[in-house]
Image (cartoon, rainbow, N blue to C red):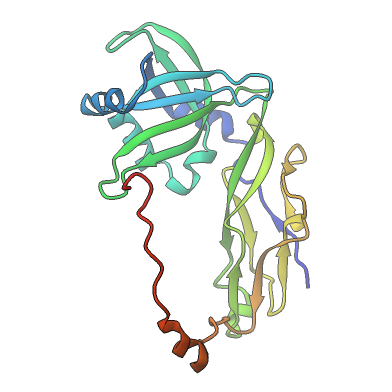
Length: 246
């Protein structure tokens, strides 16, 4: 059985949230690994803002304050950081109060050091009102405790963790909520079942693909047959070193 679910929450607070969370930056002209390392040593993060337009490929090179970016990452759920518009103020230089450019941006990517968690780079796009941008909107599941199928011992198979939409910047949903409250064993939710703002366009060639299913039991990976185990002793291929280590 198919179920219809509601998505696109928190649209009404979009403008307020964008003005509440502000990120300050200064221009930069040089790029490269050594320049980036020097910026990070000074407590700044190499950043870039793209136009995100088919006819405009310009990008603005900036540096942002590392402490301010880390503070924003603590205030905003990391899962929703890249669907939360921010107000950007570009100042003339370090310590300057002169704002030379400002506007609304949407974070696209936060590059971090996997070991230390240090933010290495920040990629953003201009998200001014009246323009459209493609956004990977996170999918969250609610009503797990009340789901009839799960109460019967069923298993929730999550097939999509995000859905990509072409969104007017003023209607970017922070998340898509899939309500499991009325789902029984055998039920599923399709991409086309998700209700969002009418201005959003799902960027998928097949909207009949399921977002999740309620299965009777969890599907376990198939065990290897004895024959496969016996033949697994073939000579190992030469290991290829990771990129950059050759």
